[in-house]
Length: 118
Image (cartoon, rainbow, N blue to C red):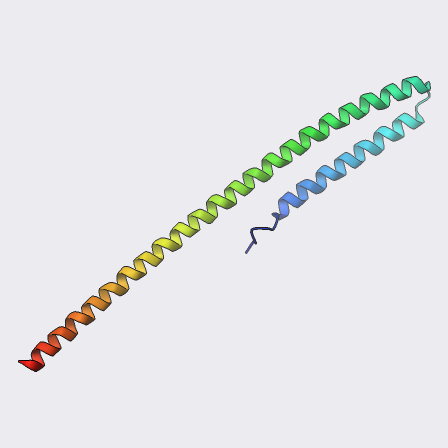
């Protein structure tokens, strides 16, 4: 059973993929820029453009991941509420059943006292 504070395993996998993708993209961009024969000004311009592109991709990926985490949290919350409602109903049914038994026992006791007195 999962604790409320635990992050679901597939969320950890998504975060791992996200981090791996970002690290790979950054390493690839740096390698490409360092090995490309061009002027320093062009290299700086390319680094800036790649940085902006990487930032935009990262922002999009983080947004997608957060949306998925929120969806999973919502599903978990709804499931928890549903289970709580089921347990509440079971508890109420049990109380009604026990009160019925108690009432029957009280009626039987009352009849027994009346029969022994009369």
